[in-house]
Length: 237
Ligand code: COA
Ligand code: MG
Image 1 (tube, rainbow, N blue to C red):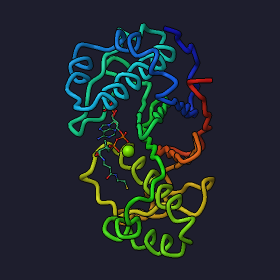
Image 2: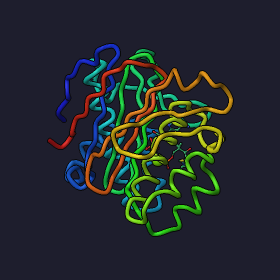
Image 3: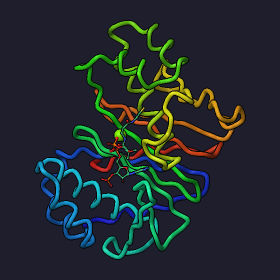
Image 4: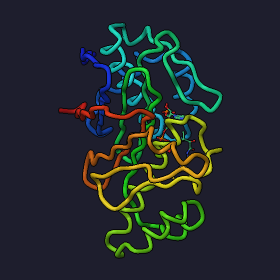
């Protein structure tokens, strides 16, 4: 399998995305890169589709990390935080996070800082406002209520992915109170942490990014650091 031998400079986020449909033909070589526990986990998925997504995204994750850390993809060893966030057990410097939704997987890499990423396929087959009213902050609910019917789904998922990337950078999973912090949601470009209820200074430490990897998808990256460069790469290019 092809290693993407890239440098990961300090103060730089590398964002990668891939389309599962363009990688299904390489399922077997990806599977061969996985550890025994990953292979076992892939065998426990109920649906073939979920199993394939898991194998492809872990295979690509290993190839990308191998390129950055100058190791063989099979030799990488993952550990997990108590909340399930994977990290490299033998390399503290390279941090990463992954997410998948629909046909898309996304990956974020950075040196030394905890990072979170989320991607969602934009859907409107349920009551988006009702969900927002149950879980989001008052500021976000008010901003979403101002959206036209046409703009609401995109705005909702901008908000969702920015919030989830923040939670995934924190690493504490769903125990995190979604209504106690707010993110911007007006447009794809300006991603921002607006406030956190527990500390008025916290927002000064964070940078959020949004990226549209394909029509009908939106992704976000969160990192507790400022002045980082953000570079996007298409795995399938
Ligand atoms: N923190 C950060 N990353 C985590 C994690 C954690 N606690 N636990 C797992 N991950 C990583 C894993 O690599 C996982 O992929 P893998 O199992 O194939 O290796 C990946 O994140 C899954 O991310 P995603 O595709 O975005 O899945 P999800 O949206 O279903 O789950 C979690 C996100 C992991 C944070 C989970 O706690 C969850 O169930 N969230 C529900 C979604 C939600 O309510 N979000 C609120 C948005 S406003
Ligand atoms: Mg998600």
